[in-house]
Image (cartoon, rainbow, N blue to C red; front, side, top):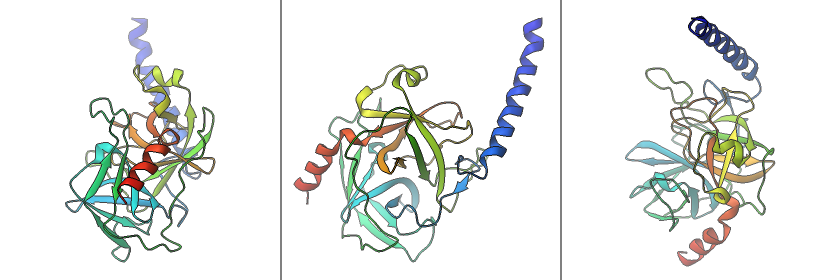
Length: 255
């Protein structure tokens, strides 16, 4: 009987806590769902991949001919858009790509080694709005402060809402020990687990391939663990610092 009476009270207290956390986060970039726009022009290396005129995934421009994204987004062809924080502006660069190179150890059941290179059919034209981003020279560890950006859903209503502007949220890298409490099986060295400092700031549907920038360094791409968008679950990112050799060799071999 006591447990029956206590459960509604706990749910009420949780609801109130989530409401106040959301209000506190609105002004400081700590949410993607119902979130905050990234400062304009701060992510000139972030790209959008469309397939069959539909938003597919995000990625990053690491070379004028190469985009880095996640393997579970693989399709036969892509229209890669770059140069704007706005998702549907027609004056930005759009370049077709029909070649993609999935990491040879990628497993579509476990998402292990979830990484892919996409080769553009022609070089991107660099400008203040279109830049490349460097691969990480070192790995960041638990406690590092990060930012994730993307165009994923901003609400989880009956009809999910996708934003037109690039959204940002804060996150902190957490330990594998803490991450295993949610995901018992992890490919330890090759993933990053990150969780928001406020419970309502987290990637959601449509955020695959979004970059995780930690203390000025590109460290990860959103892989999985972000749907059905449970706010207290960490998100799993492909840990890019472990893949430099494969990335450079793949670009060199297929240039």
